Length: 480
Image: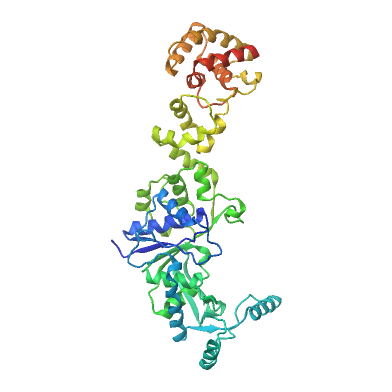
């Protein structure tokens, strides 16, 4: 085992955003590629966004995709607890340590003062920032206010001069003038730590060596590094990932109707296919191969191949990858997954084994199944134009001739297996000196009322059974 320790630290807000799952994947791959440790940490301090049951969604999603963790809330570990709300006693002591060292300070500014300050800055065309009003309060003034119970926050004391920088695996060296950084709040008036401060403390205490997160945190990282320096802690390796975008202007957002991981699974995308697609969403392998099993991902993982550019979510690409996974499923597994989608569309007894054999190469996503099956319960209304087919050289009139010839053959058919039905139809076509399609194309239309179905005419006949097949052929003949 290497010394690499990575963490995935989601907030339990109700669903798994695909961008979050991509971060989990990259974080897991870094740990597994290095032979290190992958940690799951639940960051639940923002109680306003907390959703009951959301932690179970996180567990279920990671397990379903194979992203198992080595330490976490449910299995424990040497640096727990792994739920942030259970670590509250830690953060104030570290913030007060910074205050004693002159790297942070108590701020007693009221909400009214801060609102007026920010409005004045906005009116002056300035970027909203804290003006350092409480930076230089004397120890006696601070002690007096604390003794009086005046509400306060603890702010990070950003140096007045110099630059703050860091090296990122994806974006290279980044540095900013410290004058551009705000004295961020570390501990809020209610005693809770801010997200940024809790992250730094927890990452250090848990020994995190590689921090993998979205590029929206690039601007905050110089402040993180100043905190590491203030404590005298070793800084982690930073790997920032480009955002996942709906298009060139808009990020993916559940609030805007974009699919979460749970939505994709409900529609019939396979967990490993989604994971495979997310691997490629902002990361490029060396060769042309695009389909990777999880162990292959571990072997080829290289964070330096993450793109700097925003990754555009491409539903068609996801469908294509999912189709490849569906085609590769064992027949029994495909049927297990397809059955719930068939249940909602077919309410009569049919040969499901044969149906699934025909469906598997004809669907890219399991939600493609129901629209293909609506004719099983009731044949679509008669449409003479459907019988017109140049390739099969059929017309409504030739269809009538074909079905008239087929009906007695089907009536006499005793073995109602697909191959036996097909052989009888083939023999009839040979006897009539016609191609098979001249007979079987009209049969498929008669049984379904559709030009495209999961299987040809003899497949449909075998699925429907003899009685229903004969009834539909007779009805089509009457209509013709």
